[in-house]
Amino acid sequence: MSGPGVGFEFPSFPVSWLKRDLLLFAASIGATSDELHFLYELHPNFAAFPTYPIILPFKHTDQEVIDFYARSNSTPIEGVPKFDTKHVLDGERKLQFFKPLPVTSEGKSFEVRSKVLGVYDKGKPGTVIETEQTLVDKDSGEVYTRAVGSGFYVGQGGWGGPKGPKTVNFPPPEGRAPDATRITQTTLETALLYRLNGDYNPLHATPEPGVKMGFGGAIIHGLFSWNTSAHAILEAFGNSNPANLKEFQARFAAPVKPGDKLITEMWKTGEKDKDGFEEVRFIVKVEGGKTVLTNGRALVKIQGETKSKL
Image 1: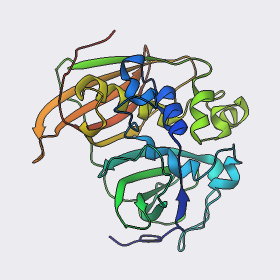
Image 2 (image 1 turned 90 degrees about the vertical axis):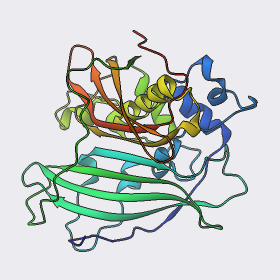
Image 3 (image 1 turned 30 degrees about the vertical axis):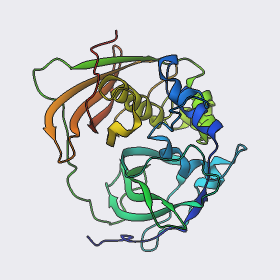
């Protein structure tokens, strides 16, 4: 596929993590004491929660807080306008898992390689930039994960670019109750804990940016909801075993406010790939309110499933 910016490669950058980073991440997305293999570094099966790599493009190699706006003011993409990164929202994220993540990057040289898959002009609402990010062992060339994501640059369209292809949707089955349901009760401090993983966007900590963007105040990271729903699915269908998750994706549909109660509803489809991973579809909604994640789809090796936890 060709078009403005397509194939543009951003400079690669090194990433690193410690066991402590994995513990913090698991705790921040709702792992429980029943899942000590994510929460206790001396557990015989201690492992990274599989979606952890989604945070590395924010974290890089940092162990200290950073200036989010300075970091996100990235290399301009050749052939398209320069967009204001202070007014960007997550559109959709998909993560594919190829190799188990080591519990620390120590002794290896990992880097994230990023390239543009498409830049789409949606007119007055804004511009969508779709990118691919791979987590690679620099020495061996092995790819651990591949993420495809889109950022929506609010109010920054109308520059004459292509509108882009129609998006593929994965709605839940019609007329069927969910096969499993999970509840996540957020607090006023949820985003203040999650941001310590490396995503220090002020939008999630202080009211002013959210007021300017029309949200009325701070909102919770979209990737918090995304990661907590991954946790819900792996716990409900995959026996909390990281090897049982092969792909995971969802589209960000509405903001989550601190204190909202999130409801993740999940449906098995019966469709399996050649390796025995079954497609699970899901949505996440705020109790009494909007659906906040749509287009939810995961490939899971079904094991030890449990029903609703309400």
